[in-house]
Length: 428
Image 1: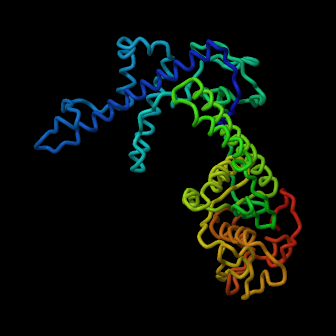
Image 2 (image 1 turned 45 degrees about the vertical axis):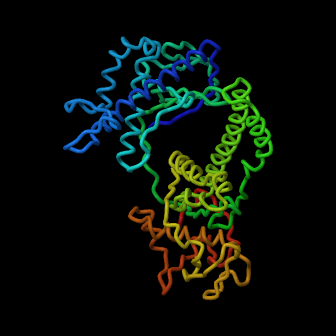
Image 3 (image 1 turned 30 degrees about the vertical axis):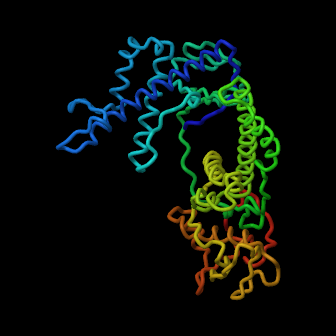
């Protein structure tokens, strides 16, 4: 089992200068390796019967492909030609080349996203891949060629875990250390069991669950936009590449860091809250990047639904809560009670089904109905385990697919006044 713990570190002025020098050296070596890779590709683009001397870099025909192992083995020779590389730990340079070839392999896999050259200041992290001994000693962390750095161990390392690698990250607000800890124990993947809920995300309500619980959307960016607007206006009035420009740019970056930290903290707390409510959670399997291309793109990006889904899956795995993805298409246009189609416009915020009468007597939020439909699809989709066989046995098939009363705590789906259940309550 591997976990990543993030801590704030406080290097002194000499260590900060050394870290900045290492980042710039890694950037230069990254660009040099990428240039070699692009030159090899360009020299193989020309037709067989002719060769372009103007637009393509010519290499000998037997020159091997600059793979990771070849470029890694060339580092000792490069240190003799470029003494600047000697100041950086050797394993940091190797992982820097590894980062380039990971991007190249990812490009070949998906077909787009060719690695780009990094501009000045774009390299933000260094990776120390292994340590002979535990680098954490009290309130300090020992890093190769850097020495002991003050660290805020606000979160103790659990018993049985060993620090395997450390990534030093530079942000506008300061320096951080991402410590990867590993343990020999193996935690099995969660399976569907216990209390089941479905979750629907949106801009009106951040989340709506199948048991009628809603969470209002916090507007992180909008609340901090007034301050960010002032800082960006000051930045636009300064001369680029000047000292005042750099000071103003750092203030803007700090404001963005503040917004991102607040959003991430809220999403982690909400994920733990949902894991307290249920043992099995079903969410929509959709690409939220498409939502961000609409007229509400700024609000969609501010809500960061994709990040929240990733955090929920991570927290669920740690707490033995199963989080499954289901098909999202048409969840808001189907009645969760009788499974008939009920067309609604975006302005229609309440669900009314004239087939079964669900929502006629009492107003039911369309987001809650959509969450109930997500829960229905999750029960249909995830089967095969003993727990799911028990769930499937309690589903009644009579004409249309109707969930039994266990899903609403002894009440029918049409009654949205179902009581809360404890997390440990099993399905009977």
